[in-house]
Image 1 (cartoon, rainbow, N blue to C red):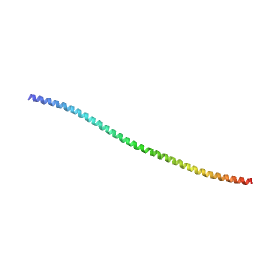
Image 2 (tube, rainbow, N blue to C red):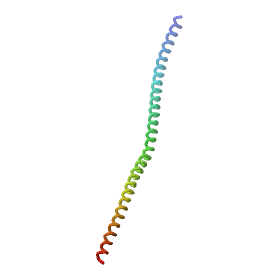
Image 3 (tube, one colour):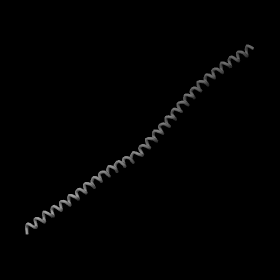
Image 4 (spheres, rainbow, N blue to C red):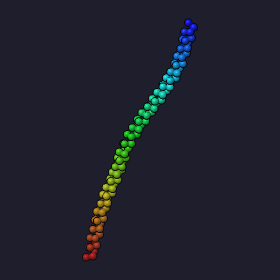
Length: 109
Protein backbone atom coordinates (compact mmCIF):
# COMPACT_ATOMS: atom_id res chain seq x y z
CA UNK A 1 0.00 0.00 0.00
CA UNK A 2 2.88 2.27 0.70
CA UNK A 3 4.17 1.89 -2.79
CA UNK A 4 0.93 2.71 -4.38
CA UNK A 5 0.46 5.71 -2.07
CA UNK A 6 3.92 6.98 -3.10
CA UNK A 7 3.04 6.39 -6.71
CA UNK A 8 -0.23 8.24 -6.29
CA UNK A 9 1.54 11.18 -4.62
CA UNK A 10 4.19 11.28 -7.35
CA UNK A 11 1.54 11.15 -10.03
CA UNK A 12 -0.41 13.87 -8.24
CA UNK A 13 2.71 16.08 -8.08
CA UNK A 14 3.32 15.53 -11.80
CA UNK A 15 -0.30 16.39 -12.54
CA UNK A 16 -0.06 19.56 -10.43
CA UNK A 17 3.14 20.50 -12.27
CA UNK A 18 1.46 19.89 -15.64
CA UNK A 19 -1.60 21.87 -14.56
CA UNK A 20 0.63 24.81 -13.56
CA UNK A 21 2.39 24.68 -16.96
CA UNK A 22 -0.95 24.38 -18.73
CA UNK A 23 -2.31 27.27 -16.63
CA UNK A 24 0.71 29.40 -17.59
CA UNK A 25 0.26 28.41 -21.23
CA UNK A 26 -3.44 29.25 -21.04
CA UNK A 27 -2.66 32.65 -19.47
CA UNK A 28 -0.16 33.33 -22.26
CA UNK A 29 -2.72 32.31 -24.88
CA UNK A 30 -5.36 34.58 -23.30
CA UNK A 31 -2.89 37.50 -23.22
CA UNK A 32 -2.01 36.95 -26.87
CA UNK A 33 -5.69 36.71 -27.81
CA UNK A 34 -6.39 39.98 -25.99
CA UNK A 35 -3.46 41.62 -27.79
CA UNK A 36 -4.73 40.36 -31.15
CA UNK A 37 -8.25 41.58 -30.31
CA UNK A 38 -6.89 45.03 -29.40
CA UNK A 39 -4.92 45.14 -32.66
CA UNK A 40 -8.00 44.13 -34.65
CA UNK A 41 -10.09 46.82 -32.95
CA UNK A 42 -7.32 49.34 -33.53
CA UNK A 43 -7.10 48.39 -37.22
CA UNK A 44 -10.88 48.58 -37.56
CA UNK A 45 -10.90 52.05 -35.96
CA UNK A 46 -8.06 53.09 -38.28
CA UNK A 47 -10.03 51.83 -41.28
CA UNK A 48 -13.15 53.69 -40.14
CA UNK A 49 -11.18 56.89 -39.55
CA UNK A 50 -9.48 56.56 -42.93
CA UNK A 51 -12.82 56.00 -44.67
CA UNK A 52 -14.25 59.06 -42.93
CA UNK A 53 -11.26 61.18 -43.96
CA UNK A 54 -11.52 59.93 -47.54
CA UNK A 55 -15.21 60.77 -47.54
CA UNK A 56 -14.52 64.26 -46.23
CA UNK A 57 -11.67 64.85 -48.65
CA UNK A 58 -13.73 63.65 -51.61
CA UNK A 59 -16.36 66.30 -50.79
CA UNK A 60 -13.85 69.06 -50.17
CA UNK A 61 -12.91 69.70 -53.81
CA UNK A 62 -16.60 69.93 -54.70
CA UNK A 63 -17.15 72.59 -52.08
CA UNK A 64 -14.01 74.37 -53.20
CA UNK A 65 -15.25 74.27 -56.80
CA UNK A 66 -18.66 75.57 -55.72
CA UNK A 67 -17.03 78.34 -53.71
CA UNK A 68 -14.87 79.34 -56.69
CA UNK A 69 -17.89 79.26 -59.02
CA UNK A 70 -19.88 81.48 -56.64
CA UNK A 71 -16.95 83.86 -56.36
CA UNK A 72 -16.61 83.94 -60.15
CA UNK A 73 -20.37 84.53 -60.55
CA UNK A 74 -20.18 87.51 -58.21
CA UNK A 75 -17.28 88.88 -60.23
CA UNK A 76 -19.16 88.36 -63.51
CA UNK A 77 -22.24 90.14 -62.12
CA UNK A 78 -20.07 93.00 -60.93
CA UNK A 79 -18.42 93.24 -64.35
CA UNK A 80 -21.81 93.15 -66.08
CA UNK A 81 -23.04 95.98 -63.87
CA UNK A 82 -19.88 97.97 -64.55
CA UNK A 83 -20.29 97.29 -68.28
CA UNK A 84 -23.85 98.63 -68.22
CA UNK A 85 -22.69 101.76 -66.39
CA UNK A 86 -19.93 102.25 -68.95
CA UNK A 87 -22.42 101.84 -71.81
CA UNK A 88 -24.61 104.54 -70.25
CA UNK A 89 -21.60 106.82 -69.82
CA UNK A 90 -20.54 106.28 -73.44
CA UNK A 91 -24.09 107.05 -74.59
CA UNK A 92 -24.14 110.23 -72.50
CA UNK A 93 -20.69 111.18 -73.76
CA UNK A 94 -21.78 110.72 -77.37
CA UNK A 95 -24.87 112.78 -76.76
CA UNK A 96 -22.86 115.58 -75.19
CA UNK A 97 -20.29 115.46 -78.01
CA UNK A 98 -23.05 115.57 -80.62
CA UNK A 99 -24.55 118.62 -78.93
CA UNK A 100 -21.16 120.32 -78.74
CA UNK A 101 -20.40 119.51 -82.36
CA UNK A 102 -23.84 120.67 -83.43
CA UNK A 103 -23.35 123.96 -81.57
CA UNK A 104 -19.84 124.32 -82.99
CA UNK A 105 -21.05 123.71 -86.54
CA UNK A 106 -23.81 126.19 -86.00
CA UNK A 107 -21.35 128.82 -84.74
CA UNK A 108 -18.98 128.24 -87.65
CA UNK A 109 -21.61 128.80 -90.31
